[in-house]
Image 1 (cartoon, rainbow, N blue to C red):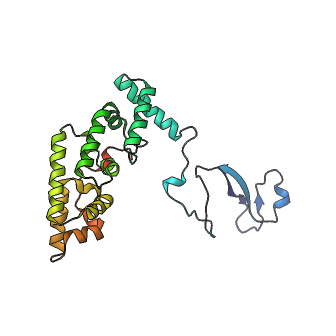
Image 2: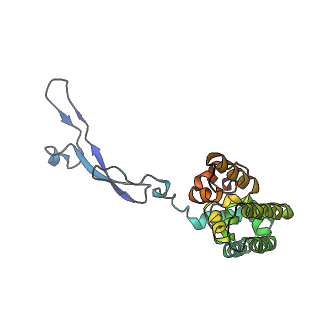
Image 3: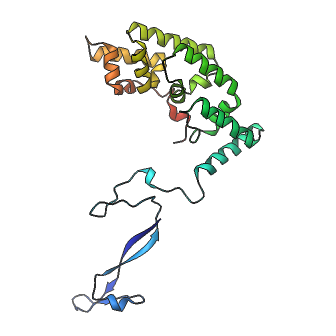
Length: 244
């Protein structure tokens, strides 16, 4: 966007002489007796220039920075499909249609920022993805399976599905042992989807019992999601599947 910028005029003179000369541009002579600056326009990378009363930017996040011209979400998506198409020998149009199906099956999945290598595995194994979603819904009928798998892509990508289902059964056992009902289990997975990993779930419960003796582990986990985050390891973190 076009944004104003304040440009100071350079004034020079002999020290102590009291004589000051300004390097003036066209029309500058008319403004010499005014303020020693002028306002010009320049191209900004910011999508907006919201400022406070002192002129400080109030939005300093990445969201306030505009993408380079032409580098749109559509062009990023097209480039990703082009890379995958060259690697696997498929048509870009075919991959785009498969991605649309994937986004309908898993609305929470972030195709836009997913690494091309990971997206390729999902698109080329859509039948397997569909089957896994059905199996997971059968085990956890009360859960938002879309959110669960989008935050834990190993549920869709692990080549050993029997191992994945065994882990899910372990998680069900922990839920039963800690007296989670279906509503409470849904809340747990909504706020901490990583608890689908049995080793993390066990560690979180153990840590709660150590820190809060005498309290129900489920009550603490549901009221303090940060505790679940504190026991995570790097093995299944979603950042490995997405571009930062």
